Image 1 (cartoon, rainbow, N blue to C red):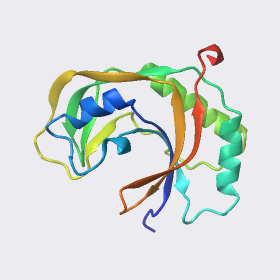
Image 2 (image 1 turned 90 degrees about the horizontal axis):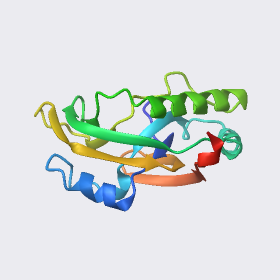
Image 3 (image 1 turned 90 degrees about the vertical axis):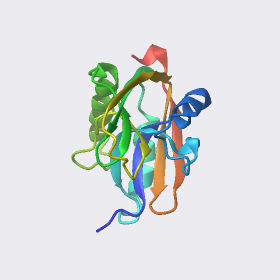
Length: 170
């Protein structure tokens, strides 16, 4: 079963950071900078999910509170795709992911195993075989999360919800 409409909780960089990432020579110029993101949690495929899963996920996210957290990437790596990464532990981002998973589980929201990828930004899905390189750090403070449906093969993100993070929540 190939994914057709995967649903993610993601963080998108602000416009000035999108522009900095888009200017990287290894970035795919065919993809709009508005598609740049960090997947925080991969949830499930909406195409195959029961119809009540999306409203249950939105209801659970409505009850989630967390503080903003920093993301900072200082390397380009070529794995299956070209990505921005760091060797830093991104402890605050990983703690955020863990808190969000625990919240969704406690709220009995639909969630799949293996849902919290290492934070990264994919800048070219085709890969370029150029290996790893250090870059000037690119980062931002994540101050909102976005529930996004990705339409596979259409290079399209459909926003299903958006939640601000609050410094008084941490």
